[in-house]
Image (cartoon, rainbow, N blue to C red):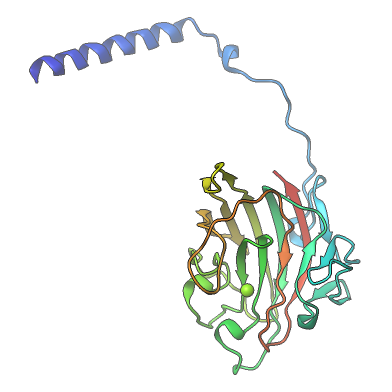
Amino acid sequence: MKRSCILFAVTAVAACLVSVSARAQMRPEYTEVWEPKPAVVTPGNPATGGAPSDAIILFDGGGLDAWICAKDGGPAKWPVKDGILTVDKSAGDIHTKETFGSYQLHIEWCVPPMDEAFAGQGRGNSGVYLQVGHYELQILDSYQHETYVNGQAGSIYKQTAPLVNAMLPPGQWNVYDIIYNAPIFNEDGTFRLPPRVTVLHNGVVIQNGAVIYGNTRYLGLPDVAPHGDCRIGLQAHGDRSPAISFRNIWIRRL
Ligand code: MG
């Protein structure tokens, strides 16, 4: 025991001397990296949901050219009025035309004021499908309204509750800024790296690199199914509450 302690001490001192010696031969510029230079991006105006210069605009108040109807693959049918996109529950979900892997997504959403009779999962339910067919980030009216916590606004549905509840009252615009890292799969279809997501809700971190355990299921446990890039989707939930609205949706590939 005593001998091993002495050996450890001698080794540590030797390593320290080597480190000091190596550092003495260094110059500051030896550890400076100059190329490749990061691309220059002009930031948008956060106050208006403005997109950075390299973002793909998914909805800016105009048409729905970037979206399709999930039911038939035709044009997205949700109504746009005064620059605001509102869910048409009878028309079903909408999906992006383009597919995505890892990305940064900005999306603003508003639950309208409604009768207190609407409750739980039946109150402004919608969602962002981070990759369609797999993972849902929940949208719901969670302002002073309760449901199971891994199903409230900002949850990875039926998996991970948000760290805090940063919801604004009905009638006010909520903002999600989502940093999503797509999974990598092993040849046998299991996760080599599971998907992870960080979410800021109205500027507050509510998911911090949270692991997504598999497909988000209403019924049953998460299951894993290998996939590549996928569309992103917005959910037309079947509850009877008044439809929610969206604005300022943009994305940057990572
Ligand atoms: Mg939902």
